[in-house]
Length: 218
Picture 1 (cartoon, rainbow, N blue to C red):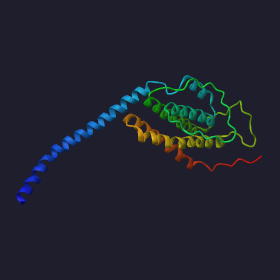
Picture 2: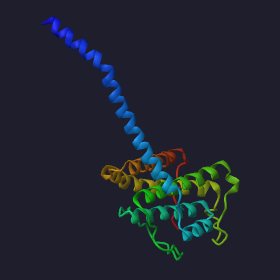
Picture 3: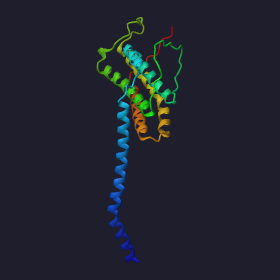
Picture 4: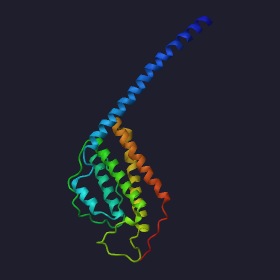
């Protein structure tokens, strides 16, 4: 009995290198397949503009950082609607009428629209980071009347812009997580996971801001 056990163990040990090679080859083949699908999908998505022509013009006009965030957030919201995964839009107080020409709703495959969302969110983060590095470059909307009580300074507008983007990211998280759970496409999952990471980074950045100043009642 002991000899048979030893013999069986020896046979197993001899087969382990082959089993490892087969298992390892399958594992690396799976990784390679996933990598190729992600690379192909990303390459296709990168070959197109992630903003419509109308959106580009609106963003170009929105030079003030808080306005810029509002515009980029709306551009992202439009992609979620195109994905049939609309996000909740909070309504607080009087809604400011938006008479700008946004043009037709964005179109594309799921991968393309998800890639658009990621790239637009990354652009919003880049715009904030660039202004954080060069506060003196901040632009104030010349068409708005100056407010002596609340002057449009970097200290006032920058935190407002970050918080605005963070609130949007909080709205995006549950929708993205739901899309991640129901997706069976590796390219989609990769893009959704990357966008969720960006959302987490934005939300975490709020903790580094100075405490929000409460508006005085008139």
